[in-house]
Length: 334
Image (cartoon, rainbow, N blue to C red):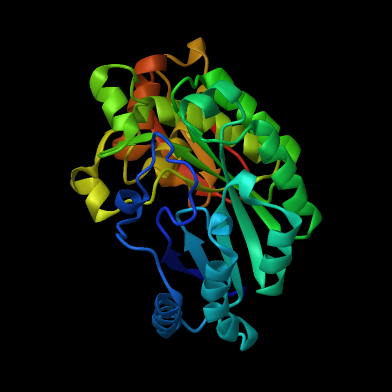
């Protein structure tokens, strides 16, 4: 049996960030109020290892901030605290996230020396206007150069994108995804924009200068983008912000925040495939969809939403789902 990987997170909110992007307040997003030090790394790893199951391995992940933009001495302090765990085999690997304009050969030398395996680049968009309006402080070209460097040095590359940023459209997000595909990452994370309290974007929303990216819009766009990555055999490793108590309690004031956003996108993808299998001749019919094992819940939709949508749209008398060993959805008329 293949060991299951458990992530041990260490949060470094805003550490190293040279720009305050309009959407960002990492302290509210992560729930952490102060950056981590070497002692925090040691305590987090020790506690995480104590929770490991018999068939689990551990990955240390530095989340938040722009890790490689902090002073080199501080990078080495954090990575050095993890190195004994890595050398002893108690953790399997290390991953971190950073900005495209905080990557160079010297930086990659350092990451390689301390055993980092995965570099996540917070690209967010490949559209120059969206980057400018979001005050990212880097260009799309910076992202292309950084991604190529990371790949060429043998690191695993994860690209992060956001949908619904200021100036964004579905067409621009699709174009960003298309450019991501050409950069051949090992995976992507998609984060629909959430309006976080105490951010410039929050003020823009209050003033009417920014229209929120709704959950429904994010789900519809997400289904299209996820299909694109799936067709390119690029894994979407996360869709939507990880829910926290603070976000759910009101720090996420508007926008595409939902504790099960990824599940909603998967259900929407199934709905699109189910629709393609039906036609106007199915009115009054009883239809049975066969789906891959473990996917009945997604195919049915949250609160049976897909079932009700199909019945209303195609005038079906009933809709049922069964599971089988198969790669895709099929339908038969009862």
